[in-house]
Length: 470
Ligand code: SAH
Ligand code: SF4
Ligand code: F3S
Image 1 (cartoon, protein in one colour):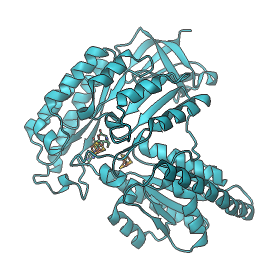
Image 2 (cartoon, rainbow, N blue to C red):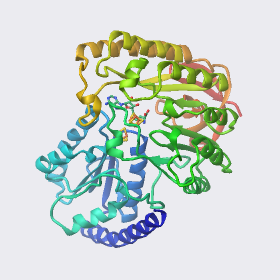
Image 3 (tube, rainbow, N blue to C red):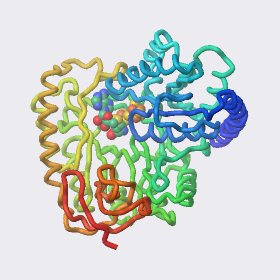
Image 4 (cartoon, rainbow, N blue to C red):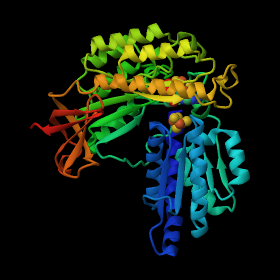
């Protein structure tokens, strides 16, 4: 497998070289640099993929621009909920008008939505102006697809049902110089009954720990101080490798990388959260004091229908263990309202968990029916009015709980990673606390990417105002 991945990477690097010449010729013809723009929808995995896609486009000679009025536009799509899907059609309408003005423009679509046959059929039928369509398993082939498009007249479509080898070491650009996402695994095997991700991202595959460590070491040598380890269920990392290794063990190895200061990860699935992991977090100097632990519902009855494989009691037990071991940890979650068959009692169980878990914040979603998932054909789909009313009640309780949590660090001096100039006030910078909250304090550009101690003067809802302490 590994050799195949390396061979494929070599082949793609060669194609990039060939394709580069084509793009150089087109650039000369145009008399100006050719521009690209990537619009990314969805989760961290997609944002990471977009960095890889941008890496290839830049190698080819395209220059990034911040509007979709570009020579090469790529929409990296998400289909986790229907509204994510709708957004893409909205963008396509606008892109069509841009292409009328710039007939050489190329429009490409990739990502999770493209893994759905019905979507691609619709695009083929009614969106003929799209040039390239590919999916989630073959993003490393972008240069080859562009080359094929330049040599052919019609739409180029390349979709794979599942992934083949993991292709390492292709170019990538990073949005930030000091923090980076690192894929540790791809796909998902959990098949939560409402969720489309396993169908569009394929089976779970873990990267070899050596490849992960090597990538992080490289990043650190380039100035990265914080990494976010990415996977749909990081807690089951390594189980399918030839030499299995647990996520807790991986974290311990990452911790040893010299020069790396902070480690984050997402997403954790409660069913696989081990005592070992809690222990490793507790003793770690580098793992941030934050865990995103999606609960989805507080009703054990619904959790079973969702195929989440834990109960309300088990989940609350995990929360208790985490808070006991790591008292300053901040917890966030995802919640779905209106899963088929959700009764008032089920919903109240969810509210109960929110109160008991005392989340710092929660991402709340209205259940969206995804064709092909088991939940889509379940009986008793909840009416829109009922869902809306419950959703509002949930938002109120979440706001009430997070208000209780905010401000608890007021008066303390904590270490923050400075991420940029504050959006509200150019004389201030914005730093991120270990627990993922933000603080704004006086400072300038020179601090970006550094860790500094900041006194948290005042809590303002979801952020603090502070003063640099060293
Ligand atoms: N792998 C992660 C979540 C990935 S999807 C996990 O298991 O926790 C991100 C979130 O989208 C999920 O946690 C869930 O809350 C939400 N989601 C997924 N499918 C959905 C659907 N059909 N309708 C509404 N929300 C959904
Ligand atoms: Fe979807 Fe469940 Fe996999 Fe998360 S764990 S991506 S919710 S199937
Ligand atoms: Fe969306 Fe795909 Fe992520 S469906 S949430 S972009 S894995």
